[in-house]
Amino acid sequence: MLTRSLIGSDTQLNLHSYYEASVVRPAPRPPLQGEVTADVVVIGGGLAGLSAALEMARRGLSVVLLEADRIGAGASGRNGGQVIVGYASGQELLEQQLGADDARLAWDMSVEAVDLVERRIREHDIDCEWQRGYLYVADSARKARALREEIGNLQRHGVSCEVAEGAGLWRLIDSPRYVMAAYENRSGHLHPLKYTLGLAQAAERAGVRLCEQSPVTALERGAQLVAHSRHGRVHARYGVLAGNCMLPEYGPRVAPEIAARIMPVGTYIVATAPIDPALRQRLIPSNAAVCDNNFVLDYFRFGADSRLLFGGRVSYTTMTPPDLKGTMERRMGRVFPDLKGVPVDYVWGGFVDISMNRAPDFGRLGDNLYYLQGFSGHGMALTGLAGQLVAEAVLGQAGRFDVFARLKHHPFPGGRWLRTPSLALGMAWYRLKDLLG
Image 1 (tube, one colour):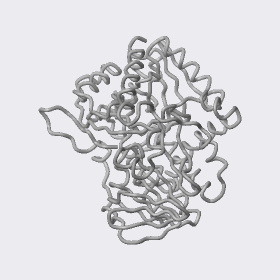
Image 2: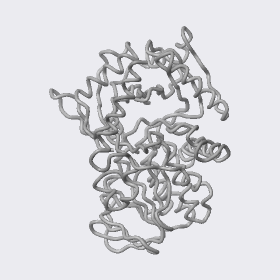
Image 3: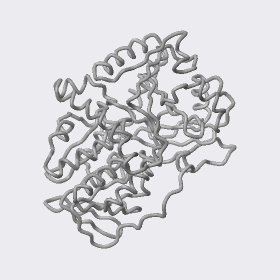
Image 4: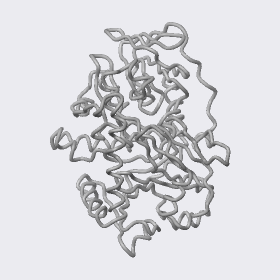
């Protein structure tokens, strides 16, 4: 996720996200050098790649992971930190494409994905501020009706919810913007970069060789894969593509046939100065992560040091929105008027990948090259599941992986030059519908 930190022309640019500012990274791992042979080469040092590498190493395979930048430098280390059950596509699409039984299996795996995050935190002693609790909110009567349908779906799948409306809303959130809220305790939130760095350490302890500053410049396919980097090559029987396949500097060289099936969407977050803990407790009594159900949504949560982390301004043109800091402050102020005037210490953002139908896109290219992409905003949980499933598939247990591989995905319309303007136009229509309620 590329940092595009803008905090106004009259102030110094903030070159790091709040997450980067609040961690101490280990020394850089050496880049790939020379000729290396392994059972598996993993391309991408975010959560999907690290999870796949860890799971395969634990199963006895030798693994080399190539990361173009630093571990967690992309979306895995800069996102909203929300670990959520379910899929951005909604369950109905899965039922249409997979049938009721496999759609239910996919749902159960999304719950397993959240539990897997919690289990890894405990097993590997990762200090990443894990907190259970998730709050769905609606800002209009129409959106409240949609939220009731979503609550019904959650409850049918065994996720109980506490619901508040009208005068009782303060029990869950103290905001004049919302008319309804629902709280569930299966999902949660964490510090994504701390979790990513902890997973990297766990992978190294399991025997994975992590190579930073090692962008893949070409990938030869066949019975033996060869991944080329600047100063070395990895020869491997299997490969996993877990990087930003949609970016023009990566996709055309490595996986052109799937690059057009996802789009880069810019998403942006601010972090306030720490606020009074008593005010924090009043605003979100459960300390849950919060997300509304608009198409162009707001999402926010408090960090461990009582900063509000507020996200929601998006860009479908790959250009950073103008007056980003001011826009985010105004959006935050409409949600929590009590925070108007609270200083914003950090503004950052970058790209996440979305598929056209918002369902995850997992599959194979040939017999021995797997890909994991299209997490569409649910990556904190689903990346861990994806790594586990691809490890199972490499070792001959592909049944669960193939549930997702059966999902149909199509390239975004418009080709290389028109698909971004086409998406931006479509998103403008949905944003207008949100505004009109």
